[in-house]
Image (cartoon, rainbow, N blue to C red; front, side, top):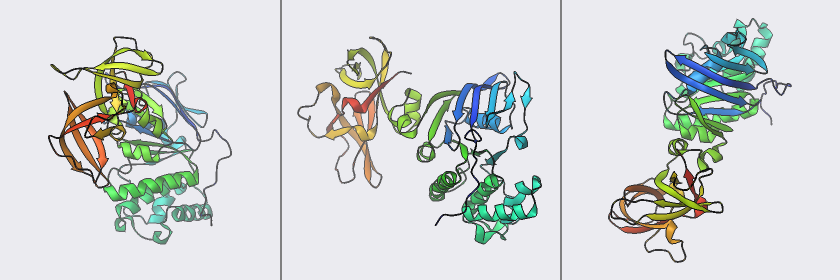
Length: 380
């Protein structure tokens, strides 16, 4: 049985968002520095990065809550902000929905009235208000609470009210400004699933801002990683995690072991890299993917994910000596379905993941190895 539906847009460009060479300054600080990106109709794109990276400012410029200093923004093919053309549409004229971190649910109104507010402001007929509000409340699972006041709702229910209010008038785009940060961990996981389900069912273009990498990986069609006002990488979650564009992305997404080395040369698609372990220790010779465009003598950073490192109590037979190195266990942490273990390898602490039934103790010698295709050499 198919649930209630929001009317779909027939124009394939109706919900597109295009940001071209966006600059935003606060005084002399470049909060957003030459950002360009395109979001397709029905796509879920996440702006991800640490505090102060420019993700929220970019979202606010798209919403019309901040005036850009340079560049152009188009929604559904229509220019909504352009310095060169002297165009600036107010937020209410951009036909967007917004879901805020604080929910912004009015406590003196019922659930129905909170959701219907946007339609009433737009002076929709009473019958249309009733029909659309009832439909979207059913869609978010609040139809049985339509007459309840917002003060009587849980945090998750208030978030559903905010979602329903953002989509009830069928905007071109919905913008999410860290909407899950006020929820506890379990409810946050539930709401991730709910938001994605709703977005897929409605088919509405969505731009989501978060500093939480797990949210971005779980929810997004594509992720835009930002730092210091600049886009570092755009890609689908798997690409962002498995093939980070640089050291910053590797460190920000998931857990990454990074070891600095010098490119000796190339063997086909593989880099031959020498990694110094510190004074008095023989350097490591490793082979790994990556390093495109690097030249011999250039500094590279070997990126190894914990789950891609194999651990043995003895040096494994038949392994390339360059991709096998000895270390001593620092400690292990029980994380339920696996153990996280730190191993001292020269001047580096290497994080690995092992099965929860494995037994490793502090001070124990182990041999770590990895396949060349599981390593990635990165530039800064």
